Image (cartoon, rainbow, N blue to C red; front, side, top):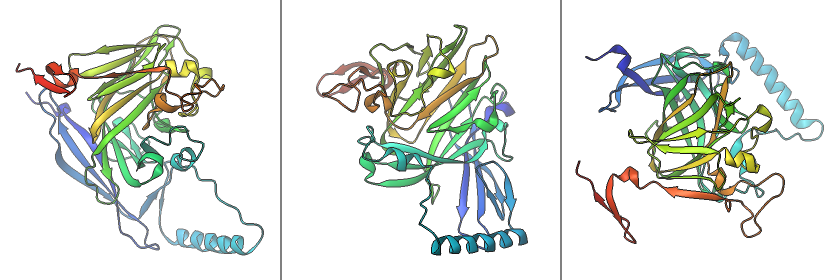
Length: 364
């Protein structure tokens, strides 16, 4: 018997319709619903919500455009005019990961980069802080190697276990410095669906190959154990001395589970600068024909210990440098101390013909 709780959201859309400056932007949020069961994963459009004449600031506050905004605009324009014609030129600090990490010093520049620019909407699991449809929306750029081309995207994230999902701080979901970030209370989990869309048209986007890295998988005094489960990966990369336990589940997921205790002092702060220990607690995965993925982030029960999960859309274990200067001179970008495992089992093959990479399929 179908239950209401089986209708779970898998994409919350935020669409900016063309709007004139003085009238403000028109922001449209669309929601798709998923009848979720063991045998079904078909997207069905449901409803939409339209928020007129509003603009969401990154702080999570909403400001309605009106007379006050017009006055503020006049003062801002006057200030900008004054700054332009007086004193030395001041260049703004741009807090966009792509501009910072895709420079000549970026060891990962030779790889594709799904750059998270900012969070534009956050109501993951209906836990707020924003009000409206369930979901989290990132503005992002899909950058090809060396930043040759860039395609603006929206990345949507939707939670399918609404009753179980318990963040420690909903306000801190989304971004944490240079990383995408989720957080949970101990003994809870978040089952999430990621999808990517063209920023202008909201058409689904497919990328030939996209890699992600997940960091800082550790435990709290050996009791609260973090894990990440991923479905649909075609390979995974871990360090040669990885501290992560890797298992393949019967439902098609690969589970990456922490085994060693950690503290906040050993957390990474830059996905392109990783110590040996930080690499031992990270995993990079690859998706082919990528248009999104399914994941579960969780932590076992134990003493009070909120858990944070960090991730980026680039293959950090293949290219990150060691901040202590411990590098392989033959491979200064890193990657010499890792192992990559191709996931052939995902193809449900009886056996693989070498050289031709041909799959003899199973029929049951």
